[in-house]
Amino acid sequence: MRVEAGSGIADEGLSRRRLRDETLLVLAVSLGASGVSALISFVGSVTRPGGLKDQAATLNASAAPGRPWLDLAWQLFGIATALVPVALVAHFLLREGRGLRTLGFDRTRPWPDLGRGAVIAAVIGSSGIAFYLAARGLGFNLTVVPEALPEVWWKYPVLILSAIQNAVVEEVIVVGYLLRRLGQLGWSPGAALMGSSVLRGSYHLYQGVGGFIGNMVMGVVFVYLYRRWGRVGPLVVAHSLLDIGAFVGYGLLAGKVDWLPTA
Image (cartoon, rainbow, N blue to C red; front, side, top):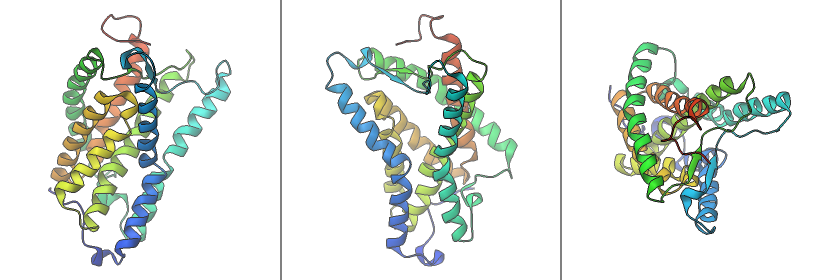
């Protein structure tokens, strides 16, 4: 199944201005704001004394050190609230009489989604690690610390939930929703692809130039696959597996293998 970026505005009964404002608001409360935050963080990193690889970007840090139950509450709260923009997108699509199913985010094809997602993750995961190590070695990237949670019973379940949350938010909004809206706003397929891919790279800029370029390339691949399959389901699976591998793998391997950089 091949899918285009979006359908005509007239078919949806929505004005161009309303669609534009809606899209900007969704991005302002989600990954667009993350892109601005990452840019500010990157400026701070490049203007700080020392090279980028001597600095660290920490994901999944403790929210209440020394207080594990409070920490768990904060972790679950953060994961739940991060999914609110996806609920907002679902609301806007339901207003059109559609829903997330129109983006291919449903349970109608679980096994094909899982199979395709696993293959994507295997290909991108191996090349992604190599690219990160090379970019860091060349001084283009910070040292990424995927997790810094305490050694408590809920550590790995929270990391898995965090990975899935990242995948759902990014693929539903940056691929499915954004491409649909940009198509309805009259963007060409090529311009929509670049817009989605640059946005994906922008909110990874806190990791450095390598994080920006690597994720932008990943964005191009994901847009191509979405248009080919008409589903974000496989992309959510792939992204989830990639982040689970990064978060859990770092937790298990950090300090135990020589090739994995640590802060």
